[in-house]
Amino acid sequence: MDALQEWIQSPTQLRALSEERLPALAHELRQRLIASVSQTGGHFSSNLGTVELTIALHYVFNTPEDRLVWDVGHQTYAHKMLTGRMDRMATLRQRGGLSGFPRREESAYDAFGTAHSSTSISAALGMAMAAKLSGSRRKSVAIIGDGALTAGMAYEAMNNAGTSECDLLVVLNDNDMSISPPVGALNQYLSELMSGRFYAQAKKLSHQLLRNAPPLFALARHLEQQAEQFIQPDTIFEKLGFEYTGPIDGHDVLGLVEAMKKISKQKGPQFLHVVTRKGHGYAKAEADPVSYHGPGKFDPAVGLKPGAPGKPTFTQVFGQWLCDMASQDPRLVGITPAMREGSGMVAFSQRFPDRYHDVGIAEQHAVTFAAGLACEGLKPVVAIYSTFLQRAYDQLIHDVALQKLPVVFALDRAGLVGPDGPTHAGMFDIAFTRCIPHMGVACPADENECRQLLSTAFASDRPVTVRYPRGSGVGATVQSDLSALPFGRAQIRRQGQGIAIFAFGPLLYEALKAAESINATVVNMRWAKPLDIEMVKKIAQAHERFITIEDGVRMGGAGAAVVEAMQEMGIAKPVLVMGFEDEFTEHGDPQELMRLHGLTAAGIGQRMVQAWPQADASPMFKKVA
Image (cartoon, rainbow, N blue to C red; front, side, top):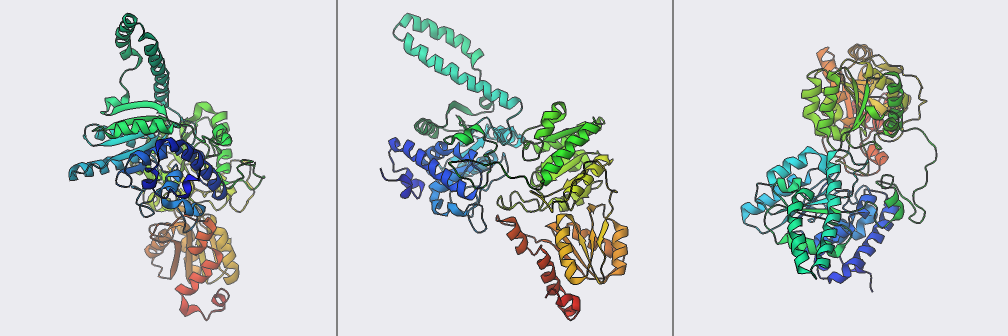
């Protein structure tokens, strides 16, 4: 048989296949997926788990006319391969290449851009309502995982959809896994539904046996009807107005096609419960789906190799600090919205299980839960990615800051994250937290300072964010004690003349390199809020020109705080504010992207000459020209 993928360039060609050929296509597509991701890195185990589901959806529904909305979207590699992007998979998550998530501008088959959790049902319902209002027969399908179903937004959407009379299908991809192990009552509920599947299979078998004895069959059927409501009551989804089907085997492509064909003919809200396994078809990923969630490049024949010991990452520094501080202070409580591994909390969860809380993919709840703990005298630490704190902004303002509650926010993945692209970039947190009254915003420059500022934040009587990037810094030696730094105070790291650089966060070290060429003063600001006004005044009075640099957006960021302070002091001297421009930064290698944005030592010199060409005659400018 010829390789099926050689000529399937669109779902139209897929739908021309006979159903009998679909299992062979699933096998080949999975092998292509393994070969592709092992060369580029990317989300792996989640994509292996949705191969058959992807084929069935495109086989039954008339995409792109019918809309598919993938929740989070990190499981859409097979979808990309089947929709004309197979020949570009080698560019996945690279600058100028394919995104790791659905993007409307990338393909007509990407009906909605996703990357954050639990948005699919709302978006698909909007599309279904638009079809209803226009009289279209177009179908809308939301594919959501059991982990994403823990977020309140999914239930807000289902509550609305249940009375909408729209033709909407919600497919629950139940793999008993988000990124971290599943938690909460919903997971227990889905497990009970799974046990109901075994009841259904036993019922089917008993019917087959008893049909040969009609009187016994009639009696059994009567007893079954009496007991069925106790054994299999209406699901929560039916109570919300959906017609429920399932659970069914998500790796039986022919069974999926049969079920979807029946559902596609039904009117109104439908709910299909599909059971899959992350990493399906690759034994190593099946055995360890967490490690294979988002691996780098690897040899499929060998699997992932243990990494060589290297510099500790900021995440590891946070995880160690959390355990150390918890050992010293019994008031500390650690909270994560379903990111135990990514946030470095595995050791804490094992050593302090009673003080560890994974609340599921529920950032809003995580923040207000922390506020409630703080009201009772505990000291909550919320470990959360910068990009995910955006989802709880109202709670940050109203439930924490307004009440001046001492909650520590450990903001991982601040700044650029590279291959995951604009949906995951932590570029906005300085700007959106700096404007909130009572908030403190700490910007550690290296690993040891990160630990020290976490201790400073923990000792504070107000809410504080401590932001740090993905990966390692300069490799600064991390002290083992829990010493803190002065709250809101900066530090002069290099004394020069003429020009001063105010550096916020890890870009301090690029500023120090640049300063060697121009004999500039460098200030490690450490805090975007409160700004060290005394330091700014001292430096502003002794220098003529100023540069601020940060790995966040310029608009409303830390540099803007410096400019505001100088204006209030009546100091009218030129300030070059360096950071990210008013645009979304595309995916790519982080170091390359930083160079493109000029946030390097060489970039500082180049931007300085561009900003102040009239000073080009000065010897210090000629050194960087």
